[in-house]
Length: 161
Image (cartoon, rainbow, N blue to C red; front, side, top):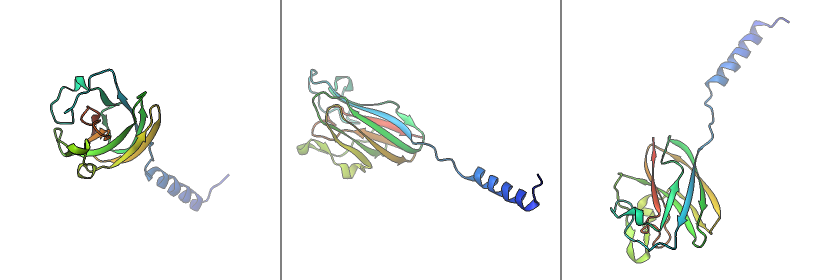
């Protein structure tokens, strides 16, 4: 079989374009567990940057990894609680020790001031949800903002490189 010069050039051009196209990678997945231990004493003032003893936290946010590459990130969230509703919110941090604006009389973080990027809204015990975000390099906080949960230690920091 003999191919014409035109066919060879067209085939080469198609192959070259295919090589130049970016590959679309699947988002990086972070498994998030929202947990609480109702048998522990209720701690407070354990919000990010407050210097409290987080080993005394009676609730928390566990991330399967605390560092990911910039780009699309999927947070696969499970409420591991047997009794309490939890949620997961992602906000950027300006610095590693930044304190989020807290509304004391409501027992929650000011989400607008924190730069709320997205959330998995209230999850009943045992339920799951997901959120995918395009994250730039920097630090982010992943937290539950139901009344008193953030101050109970329910947050983790994520680094995006």
